[in-house]
Image (cartoon, rainbow, N blue to C red; front, side):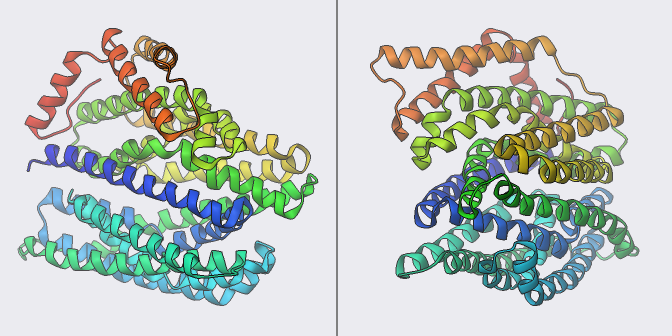
Length: 517
């Protein structure tokens, strides 16, 4: 399979995998929210905010470093360097993963009582520590499979890992009686630990089998560790700062709600509704472009090494344009169907209200994700991390000062500010390192097409005596018809033309991501 065809295949594969995992994950989240309630979800989200910090320390930039190094060695045809890069990466990951596990396990009581200020989290944090070495090692292997464009293996493992995790949790909570929020969260975390260990074992077996294709010993493999540290360590240091600030922000949110007058349980519930219920819904469709952003790292690295500037510009412009077309219709649909989404998925009107409020953030959210991915592929990851750290510092300050006075309204402001500020910096940096060409007239027509598709689908179904209702069948029907009408309108208005499809077809035949939008 040619490299261009492999990129396309792997993008589609990662998209389907991500959508499947998110669908299963959302169903699990709905089931879990019914089991432990919004307050339980809020408590679990606080545990996960600490988990994010521990996970960041455990991998310490190694996944991206592995992807970058293996991509470089592939570009040079250095088979020996590929295996050395993975071996050194695993040694690096084992050291940092073990250190993170020990720190979390022995520091769980301090973190639970002083940071989170809820002793019910201590047991979960200690259990969580057990997964960190395997998590770090899995990151190296996932980075390898991304670089060699054989993500079908890591995708299959991801699905298996999630099914194992959910199966363990569902079985344990179903068989258990009289569990508290503390034990329920511990069970959920334990399921994740089992899944993470299984994931590493499966990935390692697949890697051992896959690495046999790189048997050449002619090329030099010297200097790989030095290059790995040169990429991973600076990235890790900036990631520590970013993750620490995000964790601090997440821990301050419930405290801010309590200072505004809410009870402890109400503060956890409000936080759980936003982070654990509304956000998974609005970010669900991002799977397509997050998959593409990850796979563009080796593609853009290869183009940059070859100094193919026109190709880089074409890739960047084309991906951003189609990402924006996608984000526009998702935004309009989320806004129009917010109430039905909240009631159908969670049977909670508050979730629908926050989906509508946050829906306008989606174009920036989607494009920021792919922009960061492309910046990483172009070796601009340190700039991306600086932007993330800066917006996190400002977010922490806003959370600390605004939430006690403005409560939820202040939190919504912080969410919008952080995303828009970060995206503006990232897209500016991308425009500095490569030329971006976006057809503004077509983007405006796409926005009008999205509004028309949503409203026309509602009118058609109402005329057919199938008005929008809080049922999965009705919601699916409205969303599907909206998507079909939107696609048709994009062709009718010239936002997407036959030439785009021809270029897409030629891209596959030629084996590369060619220019242009």
